[in-house]
Length: 287
Image (cartoon, helix red, strand yellow):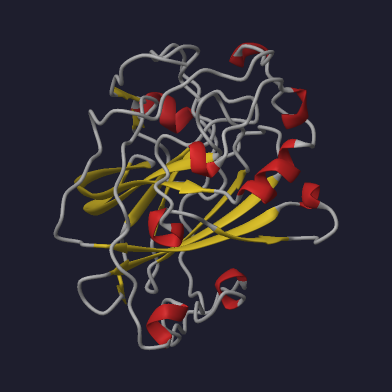
């Protein structure tokens, strides 16, 4: 997968044709790591949005990076973005806070994520140029009153020379329309990263293990700058400590400036080629 970025829309017709739920409103008590993953439908949201905010400290702004060459407009607003793609389950909870205002939550912020499948391919692409109408592993969630969004996905695969990563943008000022999110502006463009030891334990499992080639570690990645959580390194918790195939919970607080604008479009880096031996997207397993 090499070549220049081309910003191509997923049309409303295509988006509406793909099954996907809308954002479910509801409270999330998010003071602390464990409570960030406690499902709740309570409408009472008295807890602070993040553990850092509750301790009286505020994180720095997240590091913005390239959006990469595989972005598509018009992703669906939905919690589960897998569309049947196989891989190790990942529950992703992200909390959007205003790093310029004491880490107060940013309710209504739209977090958009997209990433490759277990084979290293992105929906919509068979090469570096858009080539199909597929929409798997792309989606939006709109933050609740505590600035929290929740995604159900899989751990991404990898492609040379990139490490395991998830792309994201944070939007504000827009609104849900026709199943997607429109209007407003992009405040932050970044990527989320995985600890090397955890990623390698996952990639020893099927379908990831069917790849040949070398996995790029964090220290050798062209985008990750070594800054830890402020650079997008996820906090990860195994669902079952002795069985990584059961899945992981990923958690991160995104410190943004709601007045800033950073699309990441046109930035270099982020491309690469699928691992040697990986099948074309049309033949990769879907379940």
